[in-house]
Each structure stands twice: as C-alpha cells, then as structure tokens.
Length: 372
View 1 (spheres, rainbow, N blue to C red):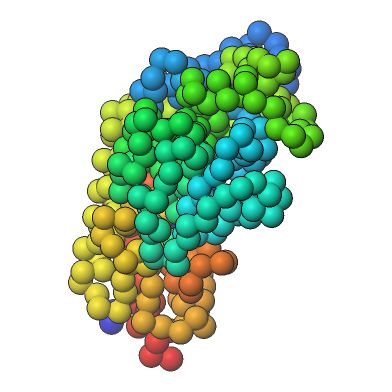
View 2: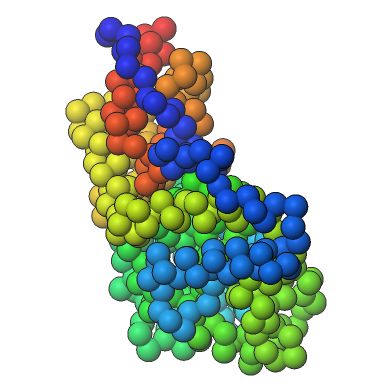
C-alpha cells in the first residue's frame, strides 16, 4: 500500500482533553478576568455567564440549576454521591471504567444498600432492571468502551428515586431527555474541547429537594457540601464557586459555547458528531480487519469511538506509535483498563475532513505493523 501524502490539519483525536474547536485562537479569549478575584464583580459575572450560557445552549428546563464545581466530571460525581446517596437503595449500572469507579464508591466506600448491574466492554447491561423506587446511577456514554445508552426509556416518569447520570462525553453530542434526569455531570474538556479541572453539575428540582430534606450520616468535606442548614447553597449556582476556579478555563469554556451557538447550538454539535461517526462507520465497512468494540449499532457511541483490530496488543501499540510519529493521529490508544484497540474522538470539535485524511494512514499503518 502506498504511503498517504495528505495529513490531517489537526491530528488531535484524544478523548480528553479533546481537540480544540476549529479556528481556536487563545488570543481571542476575553482575558479581562485574569489577575482578578473570582469573587469580584467581573469574576462573578464571567462565572454567571458560563452558567447561563450552558442553560441556553443545552435548552435546559427553566427550573434546573447549573453549577461549576471542582475536579472535573469526577469531582462533580463524587460530590453528588457523597451528598445525596443513602436515603434509599441504589441501582448502579456499569459497563466500563468510570461506571465501575462509581460502583466502587457506592459499594466499598459509602457501603450503601445497592443492586449491581454490569456488562463487559462492548456490551450494555439490561437497563430495564432499574427500580423506580431506588436511586439510579449510570453513565450515558461509556467513554472507555464506546458504548452508550440508546435512550432513557428505562427511566420511569413516576420514579421515586433520583436518576444520577454521568454524561461527560454525551452532553453537547447526544440528545439528553432532561426531564428523565435529576442529576447530570460533565466537564468542559470533553465535547466542548475545553480545559480540565472543572466540572459542571446540573440539578433538577427533585435533586434540590433531596439536598434540602436529607443529610447523610457520614462527614462531608467542605468541597462536597451543596447544602447548609437544610437549604441549598444557592451561590454555587449563581457564580460563587466552592473553591477558586481558573478564570482562564472559564473564558475558554465561554469561547467554546459561543462557537457551539454559531454552528446551530446543541443540535448543530450533535449533528457534527454524528457526521464524524459516519466517516468511521464507512471505513469499518470497507475494511474487514477493524470493527467497533460496541457489539450493537444502537449502543455505538458517536464521541468516544472504540475500535478493535485483527492484531496483537503489541501490534496495536506499534500502530499507535507509528501514527503519532508520522504526526497524523495523537492519543488514539484504548483506555488503559479497556481491551487493546483504538479510541478515536469524534465529538463536534473534530472536523470530518481530518478523520478522512487520517484513516488512509490508519490503513497504511496497520499494513506496516502486521506485515513486519
């Protein structure tokens, strides 16, 4: 096979932090908040803008609250679990690395009465087993497996418990039925291509009611506290963050959301991600040596696209290094806990033209490492 000549304009296909938006220029960011207190008028205004813009772009219900919290999506999930769980049993659904982390928190750290529903990489548990009387924890999209829930039909409209959804690699890329979800967490570093270290927490009125009516039996560090004296700490959802945020990261996130608005809002970014997946799907259809890790098309992720190859783990490792050395694909190896393979980010900040330029290199590289 002839070595390709055309290279991607942007070879960044990492699943987090993800590629910056097309045309990104750090010099275009509004840096008026740098060197200022995040509690100053200008600092709070920027944080409030990020919150309001999130609500607007995602078209959240008017009575849902949005807060910016520490420690990325992980911090948002840990905060929620330590603050809200324990009132009733919990159904935990896990089919990849991060879902299993939340399962560990529930069963080994908090030691809450729970039901565990798991599946191997590439598969999805039977979500219909969710009990409406219980709290439910699940990831919308398994970032390390490329397997997502196809819809929220398994969540009862008459549920008594809370639905807690880790949606970090789904928000802005997949349709989210907000009315079915009581707690949603994500981070800027995924679909928005933003910076790390900050999480976003979305709460329904039902979730707020839990915080104001229930106090867990275990101690809560300050960084996890969402309520005080039986009342929600409203400031968290109005730009008064729990700890000091990076105002540079906030400016970067505002820039990313403004770009999403320019391509048609969440609907536009969802469509772009689906178009990117279609490029990979065509390549897989044309090449018998590669396939999706997701066993069912309806559960196939359109962001963290995980692929398996007819190759040994050593050959896959050599392929990943070869493509990086050629400068055509960076950071496309499978997650460390996942089966050996590739993980190619196809969120909205990735251009289809870059995928189309990279894939011939993937075919060429595969031939090189398997023929050696």
